[in-house]
Image (tube, rainbow, N blue to C red):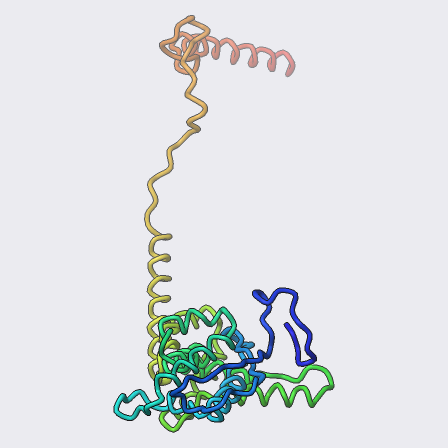
Length: 294
């Protein structure tokens, strides 16, 4: 970005100068009856935190007043237009298009031949008058903390925040305690709760009561969702199948009978032999113990 020392950017398409010298020849019917003297007008940055709209608007408006064409910006009533309105409007359109960053072109493109329309469109693009716009700058003022030991820098930063907030306040849209309440409330809750009121923040004049109602509804939704998950997790599960499907049951086979119709545990022949063997064992034990006793 170039500066006031006359340095030029390497690529003007990507890095437009901070100020631009404009020389325009008014039309024969223009209110400005002499050639304007090459003023150094600031270039309007894209919308966002680094916008210079407030300073840009002040300087450019003073220039239009100086060359006697500001009446084009003051009213849209055809009956109140001066005889020089057409030439003065052309002068304003040509000037604005030369002193804005290309990122602003999409806001003024619908108003190619309407100087007042361009002026209003740029104001709306750079001045967020929604509830969220006010809340943003109130929060910046409330949560700002001084870093380091440079008190002058901190004072300047706070002054800029105040200036941005003050630009959004008008007699028709004053700053109220409700705005401060909303800013403090949204600053005190986790970020994942702010999402449920984002649509409201894009509207103008939203009251704190509306924000509170949206947050309570979100709380009810989350509790209901938690109950559904809890019930689902405790639902009756189907009985688990016994055994391992990867290990099929072993086939029956009796080694005594050499048959696969039964196994050794259920073999009648095995049971019979055991029963016949038991009396013999008992007799031997008795005889052995008798001999030992003698």
